[in-house]
Length: 315
Length: 288
Image (cartoon, rainbow over all chains, first blue to last red; front, side):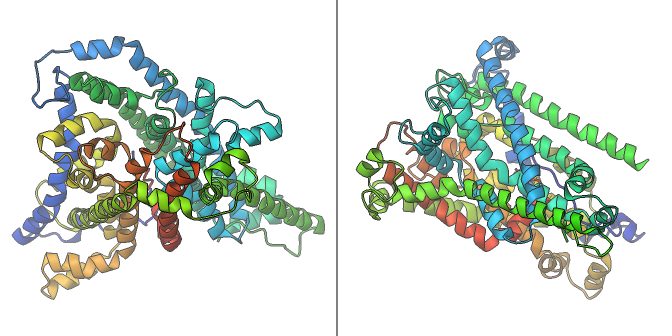
């Protein structure tokens, strides 16, 4: 999911208000021609899969051969909604979201505030925190798998040295969740850090100066100025994080294979398994649509809330 | 600029010292934190330079057994890393070119031109922002198969071009351009295409770099879709290729870490070259 956070000023004039006269045929033709390439690809390859998914979910299509198969009505949906494995994998995606969202939001906020107070070493902080985000998930998995290796890996050694019990990172369910959450926090933290850093830079310096004159210490400035002013950013970071976490697949699939015993399998891997291991395309499409509706409902609720709040503050 | 607590004359001296001490403390915490964040990279690099026997015997004493580049040559010989790189590069570069070209054209038309269906196009594209496209891989797979696009690079390029966010980035930049400039160009006899290509595009270079960099990263790093779409061919991208090395029981630690280092070093280089545009791009669009 994506959002445009426009930092540009409002448009000077809307194109229709520009001139009172009617658009010339050449303007209309240019408009159609310039939009056409994008629009064709957009309709075919972004809207297309959605429509294909809706159609397939009513058929017993298989993934191995082409063709739709037979119309089965709502039976795919009935089966998905009563399949406990589907709801288990849905719960795993939700659990992953619950485990990763708080550290990724709070840590990013905290570190961005710290970083904003330090003027030296900007590039170094960006490098340390943001570079993991541009590294492919498979590279991250390879490195962490090595660090999680029992006995000789770095992380079991560190756990040992600190005196913590070393969980079985790859072989047990709770250890697996710990491993995946630690890895995800390391990997994607930089994205939220950048969003927060940009927002903090927008806070005008004179606000802090005024607070300092009034005798506010640095801690009070953070608590009463920075954090409240970042409310909108926090709401954005929160929803982006929730939606990204609900779409988790790469890390869990590569690090744990959804295991042990499917106990960490997220919903996208469930769809992947039904579609590409059991070859039940129609059924997988029905599961996709159920999952899709849940995601769209969450983002629509967020947009609605935000719009209402914006309208409320404008009034 | 940012948060600066200027020491003021009117302030009591104790508060200034307190603030300075606080900032010093922040700096120490932050540096520690950043160093911890770099550990996985450093650890991968160190491991890649050692040999497997020494690693298994004394994993944390990093000088045991001597260092060599041996693991890199075996990694390069055992896996077609060069081919994977080339595939990723071709796919990402083509994705960037088509995305920038088509999305800027659409953004321009939506910002300046009045034509039939403009409002409808705008509404449809806006609605597309909310579609979680990654969730739709299964129907996407079946659609691409019926178009016989699976196993081709087009299968990986087209989804990037169809991303509505890029149109919005261009659209919002174009709308910042004063309409007087465009009218002047029109009065001078420039065609709409010339207005787009020679007046507007040079102005919105920041938008081009934002879209280009973000498209490049997301195209380069995507995993699930290339895994499915290219499964029939030997030509994999670097993330999917390296994922085939994931094996918790493999004892070839140095070789695997050497491959990982080869997987992240170029991205660190790209980051160092474009870090400002990258951070700017993420800050203005919330692409994830």
